[in-house]
Image 1 (cartoon, rainbow, N blue to C red):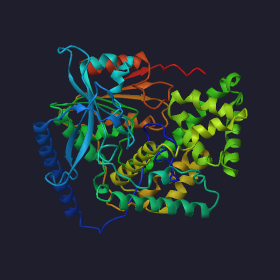
Image 2 (tube, rainbow, N blue to C red):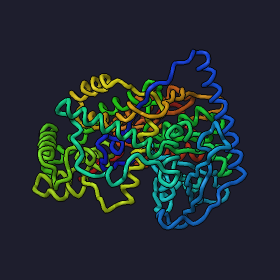
Image 3 (cartoon, rainbow, N blue to C red):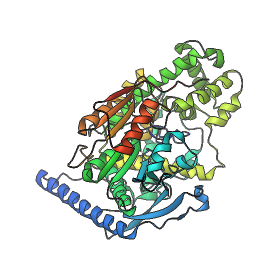
Image 4 (cartoon, one colour):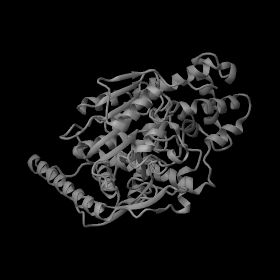
Length: 533
């Protein structure tokens, strides 16, 4: 399931546009262990050499900053440019692709400036190009950091403006209603398996040349080339959600190149979790956060009239779901579309009031508000292209990053078992990731994330009840990175903590980015303010 922004559910494949997780492919002919190991080391050496060559080239070329193209919707004084990187780092002189970057200059004095701060919002598949808008919009949470740093965003490889990939026709991809993710029969499962296989085939047909190179390690290498193009000796980085895994892999591959790194809402970096198990863990956490939201709705029954207990709110949800399954609302909103809309509540506290309001309007007799909120907009062709592209990158990176189970029996057993107690997201997430079971290019072995020589303290920020990236992931990354510090937002569950107003968190992030200092030990913060209806 995707772990960046809330998106309208756009695929029958579970949650790529919907959730945060993972996928797979089949094996090549077995080679003797010794030669396989030698080949692996040789490949790593070639890629390490390739990224050094590419970074040196980028440092010499720099970035030709210009006003941003009008259709990028990034107004002055934000500037845009391009950084060229090898498609394949083992062949640095081979095919190059261009990555879109943008920036806004630091707002402080020359003496206050500390360099560039690069940002990744997650996904995989999220665009970082809106990051400089935190300065133009005068976001108070980032005002102190903006004095010291140029805010630099970028589209990772395959995303948006950066050699975008595609797996399906965007208008077909968003069409609704999709099939109910919860299967009622073996026949339903067969249909979903066929859709997942066809989606994987579509990725290869439309973007086959890119797929073998759509990996987190390659995006980390791209990050190092961007660093060099910016003229920065070391990297300052803020990664949220999947961006934490990108940061963790970068820190492992380039420990001596890190200056400051903040990772917020952490993907569990364990090789055993990337990516199949991570998605199963997500299903459990989503159920918990879904219940948190229902408790809040029930506590505000005087406003929403959806029931005064969690069970009453759940009964309203099940009634709505059954109604939409029988006859899609407005002809377009079935259970899949409902999950795509309602899942934003367990993702983000900022969605609690809007989702509850639309739900309340529906129960009071206004169906149109829910249709408008949950149905795709076929006239928004640019938005639909972006949605399909985000789903394609999510799938490509997770499926190529790691080996996925190829046995349908395993998928079926694991998800059937989980669904029994965690029904909100389990099957939707499964179908979204199932293309990885028949992935048409070689699947990699994930990087063993760990500290290396020269790595400074990394600041880890995590909400205790995060659904998209469960808390155990932050604990695991903290364990692996020596000298790191963990800030826990106790009792909170919003995905993405650093952008919220919580002085206990905000002040420490500022202090770290401005001075490099971390607390002597880990810190527990009270939760940010609960939304008010």
